[in-house]
Length: 209
Image 1: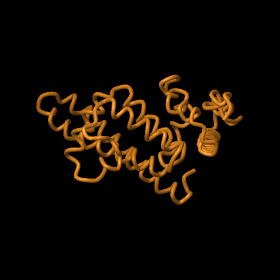
Image 2: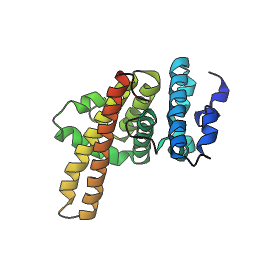
Image 3: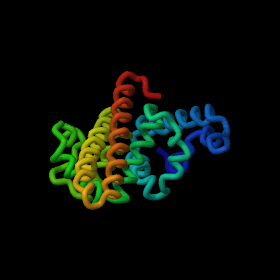
């Protein structure tokens, strides 16, 4: 892949130009689906490690706003919707890896399922390990089996949601505001887990668009 791919990460086709100007929700939806498909197929076909590295580091270098403009309004169970959720997870962990590690550790202990194994974090998993985990999951979306990457992300969300729920119970008697915040986070993570699981299923059926 040539070096000029860096800018097309945000605008890989003329569709991107229309996205920021289009007032029509249907046009926005078409643009979101088109850009997600172009980006994913191009990177997966060419398998350029440097291009993948740029995509993994994209939000760190450019923030989340550009990706939000492209994909945040897409259906949760669509290709752009799934990519949006993967990047949101990455940003949340990179921004506060200590809290992510706290939730993950508690969820791993409390959750009676194979989700921790599916997610693939080491035991114990500290902040550094969780940053590496979410980057590896995102890398897998561009280089490996996309459905597996989505399943790993969904499993990670379920572990984190469990940890947030149990910590919310702990905080409720003494810090109700903190408990409410954790409860909202648990709900958001559970919703992401459900959405990503559906997306993985659709991808395996060649129905995720």
